[in-house]
Length: 519
Image (cartoon, rainbow, N blue to C red; front, top):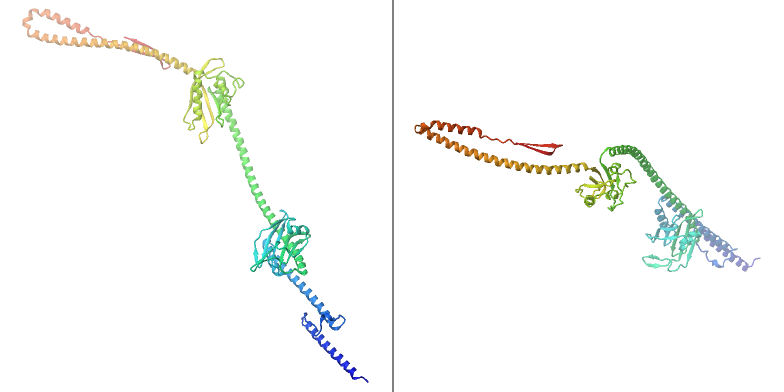
């Protein structure tokens, strides 16, 4: 027979079991409903052993909480990677925009406060900050680091993530509308692909970075690094393509220019051949002319500094040298003093002054046309005439002077003979003038005599008339008067004197040489 106490004990156990079942049922239903943070009713979870029902259920809940937490973290990571893959896909051609979209969305997604993204430029051995973002605002900060410089440069070399706690106050400041404060955590993550660092992400936050967030950043770093590498390759390819196109265009332009140059060169060569032929013809003509002309030609290139001295180069033709009795350049060198040393002492100063005045006159109005005597090789002096003309630049500065030498000795001899003849003619002319003057005086005397005779005749006629009136009175003397009148008529017929003067001037070659005077 069961005692009442035993029954009471059984009843208490049943009631306790019922309560545990109810608590367990409530706990399980809450977990079933997804309330994983539910507390087990009427129990201190810290005092429960794992071998009891409640302990097992609490352990199950904790595992579910952990699994749910891991699931949420995996989902957060998966969603984040998908989000940023889409961002990278949309901005895969623009490095600047891609970096800005990555850092701005990453700060929002990971709930950090500020951050920056750096891109490695291996050609310059630099790490350059491309984008910076803080408190929903784009920041414009230019920063560059050399490899190994600062934490950024060290991370590039070490290729490992760096997580900083207890950040020094002077390391970085997070600024907001409420003021400035040092972050609690800073993480620097290298963006690697195939163990090559393409960039670096730096984040600062007031909260600590959790393990799954760090893992997420490292996984994201691979995708970002791959995209940065592709962008850089694309940009490099684009740059190379543009350079190739430019080079191709430049090459085409160069080919066209080369073709034109070849055509111009061909034309130039043809022109050169033609010019050479013309020059050869001109040289032949010049040589023929210099050989046949009686003039001696000369030429000088004027020095740029106008320093003309005895040794200034001059060109004398063979005819010029032959006119002075010389044969070649050995005995008559192509220098100025070969000619100037032969000038007659009386002519040298005037000749050289005329030469200098002609060269120095930038207007070109002063001619060079002089006559002087040159000493021949045999020691005699001979008269020559020099004529020159100068080529000048637009400012009138002389560049080249050339001219000719003319032998005028025969002309000078003719002038001397002409001067002698002119003196003789002048003397003869004076003599003739004297004779003409004397003849004039005689003519004047004869004219006076004729006038006196005319007056006498008029007086005689008057006398005849008077005698006619007295005819009767002189009848007895008529015979004697008639005889007198006849004598007078005879005298009138014989007094006629006409001088005949004839003057002849004889000449030779147009030059008077003799005067003939006859009466």
